[in-house]
Length: 631
Image (tube, rainbow, N blue to C red; front, side, top):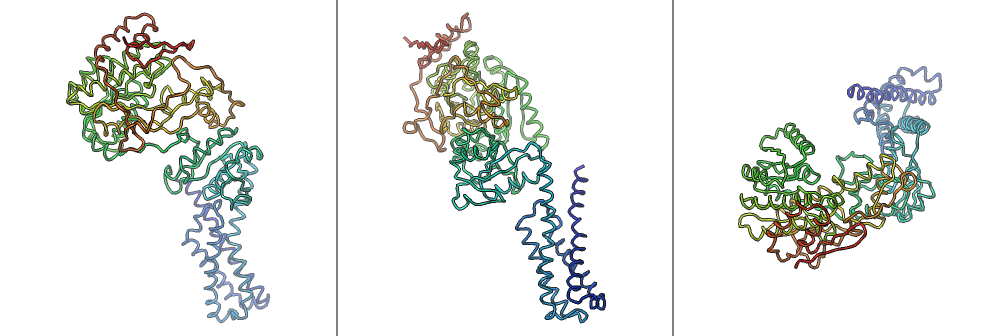
């Protein structure tokens, strides 16, 4: 089907070959007819017909050599028009020599004015035919275009022209570009691609209202992440959908002209963390690496990135078989397609709180590195099942940490969370306990280096607000947020995994690594952006409603990074939290916390946890806060 389509496209382009031959032949005959008159033309018709035929095939042959007949007529612009005119004039200059050396043709000194008119006519007619076809096509396209979307393009430059051309020539594209907006004072007030240029961008909300704009396309390919964030922030207050062209770093090739939705990643107010692949490859290449929670959002991305380092053995360990099977099949397919046969991919099902199962795996495969991502992370659910949070997040971490020491694992990295900082929920408190276990074994172990990594919310991860919002939008709304004032620090899944792997490089024992995550993002703005991506208007097509803070949830995340007091690393975006005094009672606390499994009510479990984690404040629905200090 594709070959037939390409053949038909080529046939349509080649239709201009006979058209050009006929036009050149006809204009040449008319030029000599006007010079000779009818009688003179008849007397010299053989020479004139020969000259006209020769010029027709010569010029069309040059066009073919220069691939003019492979040109998309719908793409023809000023550059192509001028190029065709110059080539035509070049060919006609050679005709002067032919006229001079053929006795039957008139002397050029007598023919000069006719020749100039002939040359001008032919030079404008050949590209002009293509422009007429293009104009006719665009007119038909505009007349038949349904569901037009009034569109404003940010950036009156090359990328902006790409957007306009795409909207005019692509029948499936419903954008009707109304105007451009730009910051360049030399462009503002003028016209570009036949459309007005307005500005500056800071006034875009007024321009959107004036032109009744429904969609904005950001067409600046070399835009910085910070500037993109600024523009999106301005558009947050406007009832429009926002899309953009890829940035240069995202382009898949020199001809990449996709118009893509503004991704939530664009809301990050900082540059992404860059992973030093070379050193990670050296660290993990040809080693045995184990990932707990390998089927989760973080675990599966860890698996993908570690897979690229070509470990000797890659062990995927998770209690949930469905997602673990998915990542196993993904990597198996990749190994088959790329003929990779030097990686032993092992997929095992089990829980980290099953000590026998964990020891069975670690003693059999003897991993060099363990990345411990298995955990319960959903804040409201863990408020209702605190004992289970302790079982997985605390006991599970203890089992992996103890056995890593016992079997001589080189490094173990715990995936922690910003909610471990002065926690107000069970999930955060149990993750803080897990960090304490890691720091305890970092001091105790003579063979294994332990570290933890904290980061904020992960965009698009399982259990995050993004999948929830998308589902609510698909169902027609409303989109529910806990509070319009709520803000969170965000990072992407690849960034989170990059940070975790960097910790494997930097870990010397007992560190808690944290990330400079830039400015926090309002959850309300995330909801608005997702609604606009779906082509809807917030609070008009899809309502956004507040439902109140859930148990254990903070209105504002605490600032994780105090750069003045944090320890710098080789990566300017990664810091180390100053080391606290290790709690020598960790092992005793572990025995105490196991009592939670015999308690009947969740309140008692939380109070037990608060007695062990002194920074933990229990927050209930009535907003009463209870913290129990260690005696």
